[in-house]
Image (cartoon, rainbow, N blue to C red; front, side, top):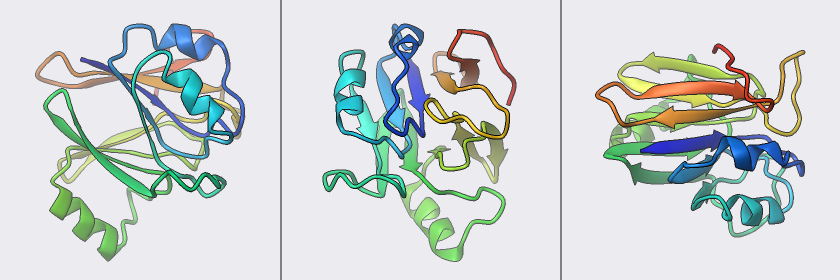
Length: 160
């Protein structure tokens, strides 16, 4: 199974995202979407799970989503500080028994396994900052070891 991870589109969905996400079975959008039409466009590619970011006003999106995909449990939330988890967030992680946390907000790509949980931030697809290119992530779940692949919107591989 292959997943598409995206965050921080901020009302800008680059047309190249659809091509980069060709063949994904599900898309996880980690917030700061902008207009809900962006989710409708992504749904033309694959089913989408989305969470509200701190700039999202759409009332139908929740702050946290839990999904089981490809035999793995995912928590999706916009603002996460992997190296400074609050007690409340840590308790929610233990209760949810997830293997992955997908987040956004920082506009910086991130991939690190901490205490057995893989934290992933695909960077910003719509509003890059910090001199970084706009990016998305493909998460390959077909092997025993899941493999995140960070790519810029021109299709060039990047490193986390």
